[in-house]
Length: 125
Image (cartoon, rainbow, N blue to C red):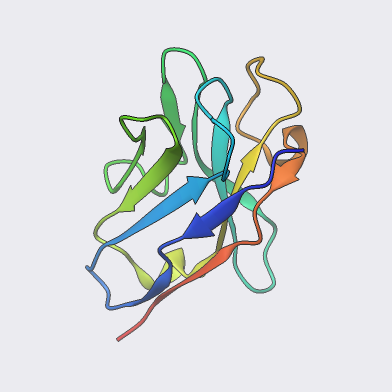
């Protein structure tokens, strides 16, 4: 069973940057579509960005386009979300997730069954 772990969250001032990483110890994520999702208090979970398993195509929520970049590391062991120009409205618990197979899946939470525990991102002065 795929077990995902996130790292890199924390407290940052508006305009600052954070880099989140998603890994699966002992397992390669290379062929899986991997998604980053976030949930703020009182709000539904939303898709932030997803990267396909083959070819590495990415998509982004409109709210993070041109600020966030999703990529795989060279060894294909982690999927990293670089977050720049952070805003207070980016504050949420960020989780990475994987679908049940290596097929292509849309960037919607309901398509993913393996979830990391999440990491808190707080953007505040």
